[in-house]
Image (cartoon, rainbow, N blue to C red; front, top):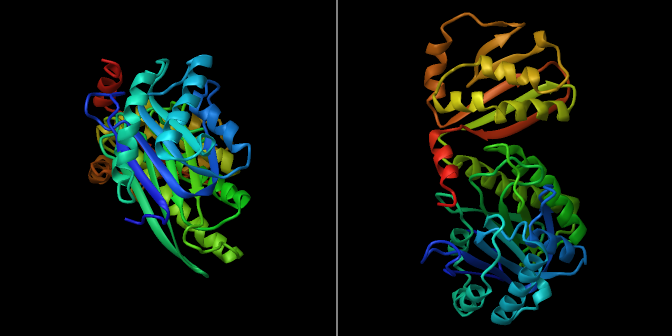
Length: 393
């Protein structure tokens, strides 16, 4: 695993979820790091989101993350904000870092207030769990309906030497980003200017995490937060270095994005919806999201049904500007529709093997314009309904 230098990870079972399940995690940098974050656009931002945004606006450096699952601390009012700050005070004392250098994040049921006695009781165990090789446990502690923990790491060689990036995330439902849709934490040991790090994160999130959908919902708690502590001793000093680091960050986030959709609640398929030839990127995204969020398309994917008309229909109501006769559709590389009419041949026979695969590429060409978008989408299954019908049971 590509563990960046100068970070420690930990996790403990604090009984926020089922007894004995890891549900409280922390990541601590030995030296304060530059930080950047991208957060949900939902009007009902959770207490930790508001706290993070307020703290990041100070422009200071930070020493780590404090993360819990089981309770979202969203829609909890002034008491929720006060409890969030108090968790930072408790963790700061246990982990020996300043409270104003810890960035909080939470996930779980909306509306429940923290049990602060549980938080206080969990702190000694959290402190004892902190090691350089415990990232996997931290990734497990932030899971909710996820079936697997999600990690991605990479090492990249810059002019001054190697730097490492490690990302972890949780997310399986309430996924359709207008920022990012889940919790994701990036650690990096490069030395980089804070403004450049933020610009890099925003750009990479927009092209990866922002291009996935499971169920059309955007959470109250969505956060992607990244630290770069400089512990490698390698400065990101040139344009070439910046592009190399940007590429590495994109790789990490791209892998996490795929893992989210692959682990969609009840999901069995990942559709790679690739739209090209649009008048603009915005139009291409409208089509991609209409197709990726269509319940009819998603259920067809689940049933391995090559019902391509549902894709054409979704593109047509997407709101994107294009001529109907210009649309061309391919599924798994098989041309299905163009010039306003279906291609000849037995499409059920041609597409059947493709539709039974886990990963399915849906190519939609709208014309000859410069606009393009790639979106990853899951199918919609009976299991998704069961999971969310029983979520609080």
